[in-house]
Image (cartoon, rainbow over all chains, first blue to last red; front, side):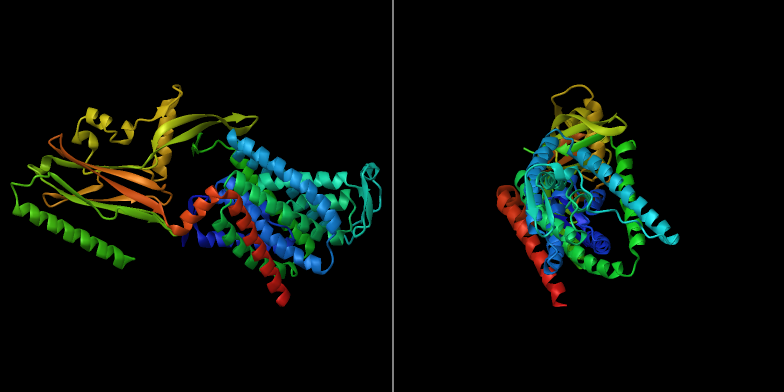
Length: 306
Length: 256
């Protein structure tokens, strides 16, 4: 069953796309990750133009993050003040990212930039998760309890100016680190079509020392607004948001996330992390091969848009 | 689907029979040497578009059948394309600066009853841009263009956008021909010029030009137009859809 995507201008198999949305949905349900960093590469592998994949995936993340944040909000596990500070950075980052995107698009290097960014990001995140997953499994075998790092340790982050009190997180810190994190995540969102939770969450825990239980809710809250903005900016600047594709992915994602949440309870956390690490590294490897291996077509041919 | 194509073939057959009768009836006073009929001059790219075939059929007035030839040329609107060569830099393949090539057809098909080189002279083929080898591209840069031209033709051939089929025209009886031209799934919107050349003993006897229009159907076209003409509103609507989808999923999971 084929469907013509009006913006991507390709005919795609509806069942395969829905399945891809579902598969990534399952993973995000299982691992509690947004899934944008897997979905965008998959779309590119499938033949969707990278610039459309990035913009449309941002649109899908809006939906999946909203459905996710509601549960956290009900448990009062969202620090709105911290989220808003992160969001201010996110807005700045989105505008910067879109400008960079347009610049690279004009010189014809945007596809390369997207691939490079993915290889770097997936490579580093994947290796971290993979190593952590393995060591957790080994530790468990040896009956060792994983050592918990001291959380209240003070870092250089606490010596910066413009300190603000965040009641919910129990912090009194400078706004510079959260804004910087926000900017970085905003740039990632606009160039890569990801929510950026996998960068933001560790940064919030290890850098800002936020309590773990409110970290995910707060990051989702920021992601909703950043990806909403990124979607609008891409639609406005580049006309690359394919609403038809987004709706298919949202549909698949919803179904998948329910299955994933169910499966997630049945597998052990360490095994999950190990699996996720393997998966991310596999996608990274495929992207890397495409960059290094001699391309099938030496010439890149594209329409000139007037 | 099969039923539909059966009906289509039947209509074509009837048409052909009709043509032949009229030709028999007025064997000597036929004024036109070539009569052409297109099956469907308006083609819609729907959301389930997966390629289409354009049926072309007609009759010609031949003196000696063994020396009669038909060439069909279908050409989409010309466009400009940018070509970048990939070069290895720091171990990875990056794009070099682009070369702009103009006058590249968005679709180009040659269907004939035998090798076009044997049908007529090279000069004629060149002049009328008949055959992939005779397409006239225009470029601002001179160096390396033959390679680039070759590459453009190769890529478009692979995608079914450029077609050259020397057995694509079937001559039925002694004055009828029929061809089914393949339009690929990723075809561009626009008007397509269909030219049919009728040769007798290597000389052009008659030619017929008609036009086919390819349009996106309402839904796809509507989305495309909105995205390009009201990009801000379109973006906001995309986000609103996502919000509604997200909130309703959250609502559903709460209900359980």
